Length: 627
Image 1: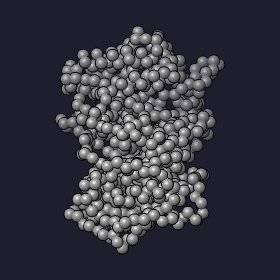
Image 2 (image 1 turned 180 degrees about the vertical axis):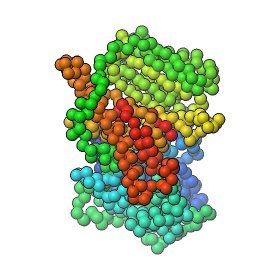
Image 3 (image 1 turned 135 degrees about the horizontal axis):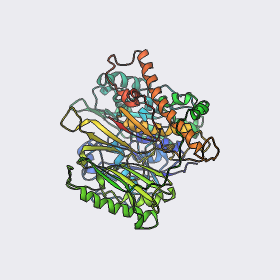
Image 4 (image 1 turned 90 degrees about the vertical axis):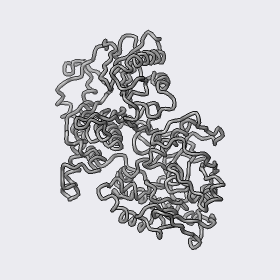
């Protein structure tokens, strides 16, 4: 059963931050307070709007923020924005100049309205985690998620360019445009309700010309993710909104700025009863729509009903899984100049417990990295911050928490985006060894790689609360260019298990294994989608054996593991076939590109181009991608 959290809602007054509150309630959490960052008083005196030009904060409409406390019946905590941005890069790391307020409401979670902005999400996550709060970002990647479904798994709406706005309208949200900064949105749309069908239609028709071959970009633009417009939420469903904000639209002043931007100067606003309170009561289950669990591609996989194929899958097994002997290979080093592989590092002499052994492994790795630095690599000093991928093996998964605490200390404070990691428990480590660690080190400068480290709960994929990224991209030295190119990358991916992203819990134990395999692979696919993976050269599934028999037909091997391995392979193969089917359907409908050599954005987004390998592979648990 999902644990209910006490949530502080970080609000700007815009549609997304207020809509995220509804999703917190929908997921069984209790919102206990609102938090807001306001422009400094001197800025308000200098300019009528008091707006700050910021990639992090929305401050236009700030004068209305105090009304949200009474409108939602929640305490509001405000702090003034002081100083300037210390770091403006996409990735964010903490420094000694960060000062976290010690006084805050008794809560254990923080929600924000981040949709596609890594810049915003990472900064909110950093603050939340340093305060011991669980970050929630239920709108993360929302434009790319499947349409909401009802209890019978029927879509509540078709896939739509304005899907998030459609769902806001269904929840009776009212958010008004108070600033525009796009040539596609005319001044006359100020104070329009973004959830109104006419506004949604105009967003698409007016912005489409700027994204002729980029549907993903268009989906982002119609939501204002590129700063195309800013909004002010004034009403929502009565289960959360006790009152609504009201002002005289005839008193709104508009100001035009160079470059086509314009904004509204709002008159004083008041609170009035929410008219919908007297309407039919909205149940919590109907508060907001939630995206479906599976993307269209994986729904096609599941529609193939693999449970009916299990006897055939098991019967076609050509190799049975035999018990492996205890691992006897020692640690090794492979130095490829730009990359160093430190494999099978153990430290059984460091102590009997797993925590002491991982400490001993860290000491060994530091020494080896210092020795390897400068020996053919382009870096004069190497640390664990150069690692791009780690494979962590435990003899007992009960040691995970203790080992993970030490593992986290391997990475210098203030450096974001730790390596991708796979962690599994095995029973064949060397004698007395409880931990083994293998590391791939990129000896080049850190700016030659980029990473994805999402630590917020969402509907998208499991959060990585800990010292490992979902993916690390490293530039490849291509044969057709002497320079390092961002357009060619190898992507190291973390392992995935079938967690339900919004709860971070495993599905019910009675769920068929093929659903677990499909969900794990979809997590991997979605990470690859965000990283723009074109090719999946291979996949690896790590499977636990739960049944052992000694009859002659199995020879004492793990029969259940055999079944699961074949099912995992089947899911991997069918996922690629489903991608091919989707592409062929698009061609039949005349929606595919005329030149088949061109990979369009949706090939990249949903991994269709990966179908060209169509390969048989090991399974669905972990993999590497290429861009």
